[in-house]
Picture 1 (spheres, rainbow, N blue to C red):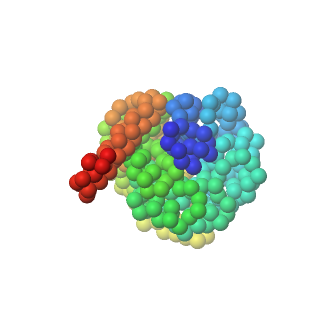
Picture 2 (picture 1 turned 90 degrees about the vertical axis):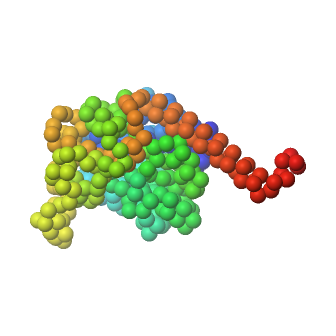
Picture 3 (picture 1 turned 135 degrees about the horizontal axis):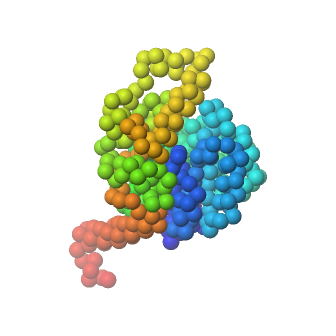
Length: 342
């Protein structure tokens, strides 16, 4: 048992959220995450309609053995947000993670409910804003994250937020090993949101080729592309991605910056980009646009969710023991006579 705000609040064994992954996270993965002592989160957008989303939430609520969460995109590009919020109000998941916009409405609608609101942030300015709005915790999206990554590494972002915010901080990005988990806890984080290492999980619904890519490619193969949603998004640098490039062309860029139409252009870019990702994730196509973060570096095979969690925790225990041994060795080096007084 590792005691942090995350484990105490949600009564989970390990301070890990299986991060919400567009098109990847599903009911089976969340069920297995709960059994393994962590908790999972699923994007509401993984269901096409509010009705399908509602049915899935009822099913999950009925069958899961632990807590679970829902990820909501809270900016104007998500035209389904209103109905998604209505479903969440009926089902009351244990937590909601808000992304890519202001969480004000979400926070207000759940302030008298049991659902905790965790807000994605990429810097201190936005962290202070969500804190003032009444969020329950902050998800610090750092430069090691998959999907829409932040600009700042965890080693800088986590200590900065811990020092300047009163809310619990959960690190999102770059953690794929127990050593990584120990490091972000040592920085003051309440836990880690881990996504990319679970893409190749046995329970993951994506294609065998996508999973194999997560095993074959590594951290150096992750690039940022603005072609998916208009905002920088991490993808595997496949031959197809190299062919089409990672930056919007001049026309796309100009349209995105036009104040009158940029909202609609971003919506269209997001729609076309997600359709390309969906096709690549579930079918055979040469247009391989696969989202992933640099922590696929630590994916060495297709394994069940439980096995991935077990590996991370085993590594955490070894890293913790090594750290304790290092502390003792350092103390003895500084005080040669210390053994004589034990």
